[in-house]
Amino acid sequence: MKYSFRKIKTNDQDNILRILQHYAEHSFAAYPDNKNQNEHFNKLFDVPQEFPFYVIEYNNQIIGFGVLRPYSKLATFKESCEVTYFIDPQHTQKGLGKKLLEILENDARKMKIKSILANISSLNVASINFHLKYGFKECGRFIQIGKKFNKSFDVVWMQKFLS
Image (tube, rainbow, N blue to C red):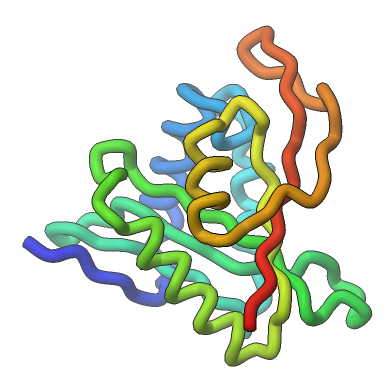
């Protein structure tokens, strides 16, 4: 079977929340630390319609997603956006993250976005390395502002300029 990428549909929300919930419960990739943080997750879906939001399917099942959203609602920051993506752990290391990032970057260029930002837990080394590999640079760090699973962590901001 092949992987496919498509725009989000209204009925995809539960499958996306399932993926997020896994990362919330088992990693530092999603910041909430328990199942009762649906308000945080629901903010993910509060994205202006003109911003791209994709899912990855495999065997007609959603196994990942990626979204761009405004960094700020202020027009002053209209050339910057923030990226979020998660892929089911059983489907990582297959080039899907790279492909999804390429799709999102192409859409961002069409929207005249010049800068993509990502905020990442300092304890999510795999994500930091992924972003470094694909052209992001660390541009800021908030020291020990988060605590999850009794461990303090920094929030690392990374940035990529689009050409």
